[in-house]
Length: 162
Ligand SMILES: [Cu+2]
Image 1 (cartoon, rainbow, N blue to C red):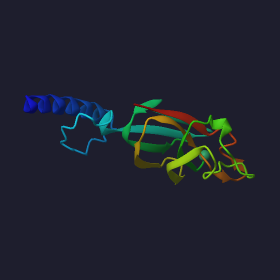
Image 2 (cartoon, rainbow, N blue to C red):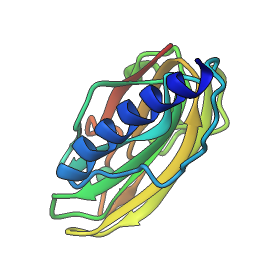
Image 3 (tube, protein in one colour):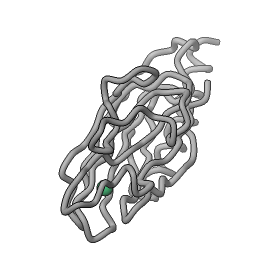
Image 4 (spheres, rainbow, N blue to C red):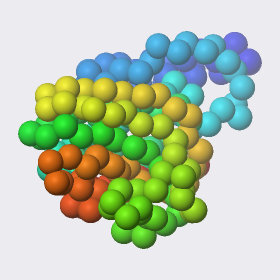
């Protein structure tokens, strides 16, 4: 019975990966052949493409299930940007900012998870993290040429479900 269940699980995983591959979003390299049914929601990993622009983030999905997540920051705008991922229950507008108008990355009520900096127009940079369920905010904390990207509204809520 155990072998049979493993086969069924592998077929489902393969189908999911094929679907991701078709979209060019594959993150299915980790073939952990674990039969541990207590794994988080997406043991094979999920990829979220986030388009950066002036002045917003447009993620390919609004939420993912907990587990390994790759965030691909694709700069479709005309300015250099960055993507900083915070775990926080604060609304983006309520994040603590310093006197220059950028998010205080060590402030109260938020935890910096990971980031990619200096993403140039047309460039894509990514990072892979293991995310617990909860509320997240992605923000661009760049201040350049008098533009304070965060204060311009360059932030976006993101949700990780159980
Ligand atoms: Cu920016």
